[in-house]
Amino acid sequence: MDARPVGAGRARQNAIYRAGAFGRRPKVPTDPTALEGAARRSMSGDAWAYVAGGAGDGATLRANRAAYERWQIVPRVLRDVSHRDLSVSLFGRSLPTPLLVAPIGAAGLVRRHADVLIGRAAAAVGVPYILSSQGSSPMEETAAAMGSSPRWYQLYWSTDEALVDSFIRRAEGMGAEALVVTLDTTMLGWRPQDLDRGSLPFARGIGIAQYTSDPRFKELVRERVADGGAARDIAGPRPRVTAGAVRTLATMARETPGPFVDNLRSPLPRAAAETFMAIFAKPSLTWSDIATLSSRTTLPVVLKGILHPDDAIRARDLGVAAVMVSNHGGRQVDGAVGSLDALVDVVAALGGAGSTTIPVLLDSGVRSGADVVKALALGAAAVAVGRPHVYGLALDGAAGVQAVLENLFAEVDLTLGLSGLSSVAELDPTILRRA
Ligand code: FNR
Image 1 (tube, rainbow, N blue to C red):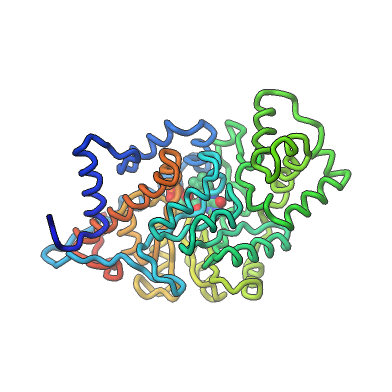
Image 2: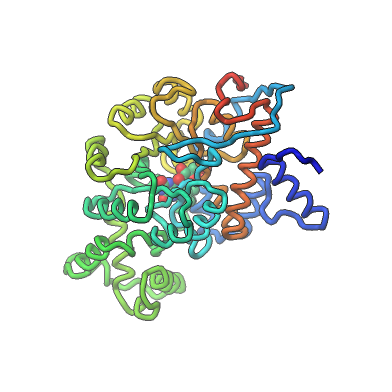
């Protein structure tokens, strides 16, 4: 037995091979394509379409992956890599890995209490979980399941400013360490996979738990029901009684706080879904709205969905704590720039890899440890993982999410060491060449 310290990578390999020697194969595949395939087989058609789908023809999804293919790692040898340090520091907190769990709305399509399960898994590995505004559990419940482990809150800016303030207050109250404002979804992108099924989770009351648990939102729903004009499109006309309509009403009743039977009889669950659809996002959002945050919260503000270097500079000049380069996993603008390509330009605009004036975070298309290493080498301070953790959730609940995160972490560790580096701090563009 090797007495020297083994890093996360070797420990994970050993655990998997040891179990394999006794006939146990991993429930959650380590191969990204196999993970996706296994998850697909375990998910409903609507859930798969929502999670895996992208905007339009899927060109941005492809661009996200193609960008990683264009960079190759050039490993160095004969360096002592027996100790490896994967920690990074963000907003004054030291984190064991350069990974973040991306905010995913409506994960309740995949499993009930999805956010609580994801939160538990993220806490088990010490990876910050960015709780979504479109969460499937109230943020306080998810936070309670995470103990003191780091969590951030992702904000969709509603047209109702009092609701924005309420979300911010609740995020501060549940211990969020950063406020991530998503800028690329002032409207939903054109998503054929969902459109062709006529399927949007929120319209069925899935993914609106932050709203239905919010005092300001409840006020808005009551106002909407009380308002004669709005009441007509909420309480009636009643949908035609089909199996689908009955299922939707049952889902809405189940997803709304309070006794199921009372909810079935009440107009409120339907009114909540309608109210959400009316106020969810603000297409008129501008830089001046973002400027108001300095007086509305003490949390570090992260702007998510930055792709153009000029927007990154403007964000930095406005005083935000970090930007997150992201195209929302290819779900918003079809034909958009791959996020890794955008990262290169954003990092250059902010001072270059290793010396950006504010941290640059990244997501969209990250599938392997090698992807993480490339992104960090190109100047990302940390990297968020989206769909893969949802696939883990589909396959094995919290344990599945944990497996995905541990596999990714293990592969980062091994790739780093096998490239001749002992810490992520040593990563810079010199370890890469253009393919
Ligand atoms: C998302 N994303 C997202 N982003 C956000 O800010 N708030 C949200 O509620 C959601 N919801 C959401 C649902 C689903 C099903 C997906 C796949 C994505 C975007 C997400 O945070 C992240 O940017 C992408 O998932 C990253 O791309 P990959 O890793 O999925 O390729």
